[in-house]
Every structure is written in C-alpha cells, then in structure tokens.
Length: 455
Image 1 (cartoon, helix red, strand yellow):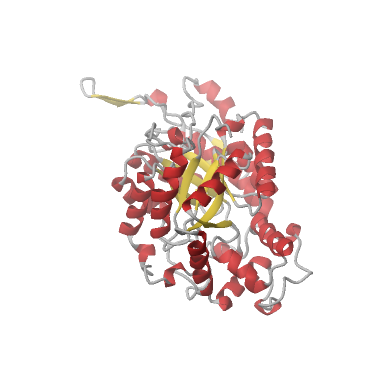
Image 2: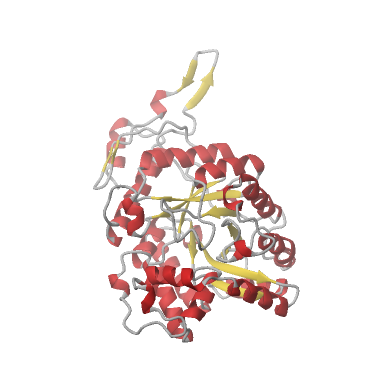
C-alpha cells in the first residue's frame, strides 16, 4: 500500500484517571488525581515524549453526573494549562470554554494569555454547552435553543478574532531611547455591534505568538458542522463505524470548501479509546475487568438523562424503548444522542450492554487489541478517508497513555505515518496551519468601519 503524502495528527484527550468511568477503581489508579497538577504535568510530558500534536481538556460550567459514579471535580482548564506550559516545551495545549456562559473579551484575553505563557501553543475548543443544569448556574431557567446557542457561538468567535487582531504584530516598539513603548496607531478599537454582543475593544493583551489560538470544535449536528466549516481548524468527533466516519469527513471537507476555505485547513480527529494488551486476549480481559467495575445504577441514570427518559424506563436487560424522542426534539447534545441511539439499534444492545459500550468513551469508538492492531485500526481509517488523525482517549491514566506512546507511536513512526521529531514550535505549526494575517493591519480609521461591519 502506498503511503499518503500527509502524516497523522494525534491529540491526547486527558480525563482524570482515564476515560473509562470505572478506571478510578483499579488498584493502580489515584482517585484524587483529578485535582493534582503533578498528575497532568506527567501526562503532558508523556504525550510530548511521543511527539503528539497536543493535549486536550474538556470542560463544562456544571457538576456533571453523580459524584458517586466517578471522580467529578475538575480544575478550570485554562488555569491548568498555564501550569502545564511551564512543565513542557512543544506539546500543544487545548482547553474547552463555553460561548454560552462566557463573554468574548474575557475569553479572548484568557486564551491570548495562555498563548503567551506557552510560547504559542494554545487552542480553544469552542462549545455551546447543552443542558439546563449549566443554565441554572448562571441565573437562567433553561438552556437557550440549539440554533440560538450556535448563532451566538458564531458571533462570539468573530468578536474574539477581532480582539486578537486589535493589536498589530509590530505595535510594541519598546524604544527606550525615544521613550516610546508602543505605537497607538497600531492598536485598534473594534467597535463590534451585533445581535448578541457589543464590544468596543481593543484587547489589553498584545497579539499573541500564534496570532489567533487554534480554533477547535466538537459538535457534529447540522449547526455544529456549519460552525466548524466556517471557523474550526481542528474537529473532535465521535463515530462507531468507518462508513459514518467517512461520510462525516467528506461532508465537512465539502462544507469547508463551500465557504471558501481550504479543506486541508481543517483537521478531523475522531475519538478512539485504545485498550492495549500484549496479546488480544489480554486487551479484551482488561476491557472486561473495567466494564465489570461499572455500577449500572449510576450509568443507567446518566443514560436516562441523555435520552430524556426516567431510569425506570430503561430495564437493564431489555433493549431501548421503541418510542424515544426524535433528534429534532433534543435541544442538548444532538449528535451524541443520535450516535447512542443508532449504536443501540444497529447492534440490538440491551441497556446493560449499551452501558458497557458507553462506559469507555461515552460513544467514542473503543478498540481492544495489541499495539500492532491499534496501529492498524488507526492506519485503516486514515487511509480510507475517514480521519486526518485521532483524538486518543486512554481508558486508564497514566498507564494507557504511556503504553500508547511507548508501543503504538513507534509503530506509526516506523510506517512513516507520524513524526519522529517536532518540526514546529507552535500548535498551529504542529497542525500544518499558517499564522493568520491581521485583518486590521495597515487599515485606516475609515477602512476599519467597513471591516467591522463585514461580519
């Protein structure tokens, strides 16, 4: 088989003791790891040792699920990234932040600051945040409608990018002899007035090393794909089958081209939960051990919330009810709802079996096998036009990431599919993306009026 003229992009999606909800119960696991900076610094250094493009932290402004089920406390991810930046040199640093429960100025400032602290390694995973529980933390009775959340998100990104451009790259002079620190003519007010935001600017942080932190997006609904095609530079997605992944890949690349962007400028990374053993039997045994540690009463309650049902509507040893809500009636995570229902219907799973399938990656593909088999699975989807790389989701941490880095990455490197050394120093460089031009560079005051009204 001829090798492609491109290489894989690999991101490590880090979650406390691992993505499997029972990982914290293993003898090797530290159930208090989720609030230990040293734990995450070790994981980041491990990923960097493997030359991975980036690490990523999911987040939501709400206590998710029952605290009895799994470690639930989370450190604020942009704060955590600053501590990790000091302990690493090259690995990209991506954090989730909501466009529904933040304001553009503060968030643009936060990610620009992380970009400066890390020397150009920051990325922002844009989410709109589903669920009424988060809304109630901000004095709102229920979540805004799905379409409204994505409309706000699009304007939010526009404002953030304008703020990142409000300083020209050479605005700081630092001229001691003349006593001039900066050039006021190269710092712009943005005067944004839109449906959701009114922001004058400029930002109070100079234009950061990457110009704009990398924009990542993870929604796969119609509105999510529209937002990704317009703005995203990397997309984290979930698929159970090769055919679904290929269809999503082709669709999103086409949408990106249709809005005038280079399809190669958006990297699509499906999630994979690799359960790795020295033999296939050993890997399957580890997967069974983890699944047996799941407490079904907790898992069923979470599944019921996702499906908008009551727990008693989901007998453990029966298949899902026939009369589930349609995707059109779901205002939360539409694409994940559809994935879960289709998985259960396609494989005729009982609720108990479905809980086991979701326990490792909440709908992401779980693959159990030897390092060689995991490398084959990654290569197959990459060659088949289903992915530009993968969101690696170790079921157990730190061991799952360590074995992936030490045993799977070398195989991918030997096959010429993955870098053996970093060739760039920024996150954009790792993903093969150019530094954005400043939209305001050289513009006069009159021109700025038309630039600001173009969005």
